[in-house]
Image (cartoon, rainbow, N blue to C red; front, side, top):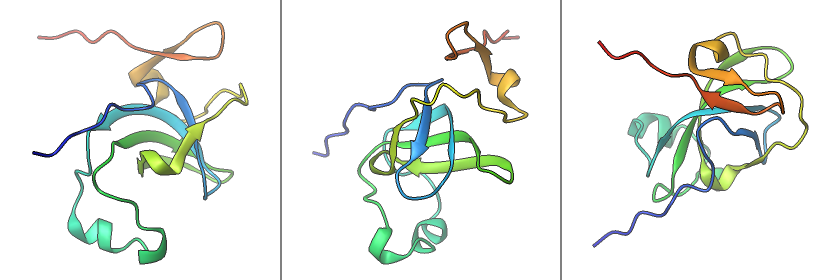
Length: 110
């Protein structure tokens, strides 16, 4: 029987990649890898993460652009900079709190 661990990070948390220079706000979490095998194999083997860990969907940004990223838990760490994230889709998902954190926006269900 496979054991799935608990996610270390939460929805709305600002995180930074351990290796590459980008950061973002988590908007979804997969308990383990849930992307295509082609995507996984495109990662160089020497830095390819394990599949048996949480993977996070980020509204990500770097110096040049904003985008959506899919990152393994082992490659993330909290971003303690306090700098607001500038991703254009941020307001669709979150409300910024007074202390620089992000809380999920209430969704209206039809």
